[in-house]
Image (cartoon, rainbow, N blue to C red; front, top):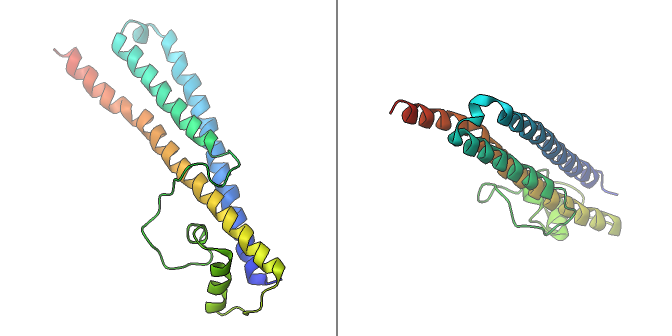
Length: 173
């Protein structure tokens, strides 16, 4: 078995684990945030203002959408949604999962040969190249979903500044 190919496989697998850990962390963070924001409904100040009630409800909805986005990243499918947020075309980097996801097993093996590896591959090497490509697709999807979910969470948390400005504007009238 080609040792470079095995190294690429483990590297891609580690990227996948890291993507899953990031999504799990954001799910936990969003869950705690939803709980915390929901507790604000019990404070009289927020109870008396329809604006704040609508605002807090919107924050919770954003956090729920972000959480659902993260949860979809755990769906064990290669073709769930086409989501990939990467630069147009990068040089073929045999260790970068975003490049590997678009390569066939033959292209992965050809790139290895072009970069100095032996051009003799066994059937096991071909299977491993196929698995690398599959893991790279899954990792790419998970990272893309994570990026979308993070931006939704940022919107939920950045909106207090906008809400406060609107409140000041309306309060001073």
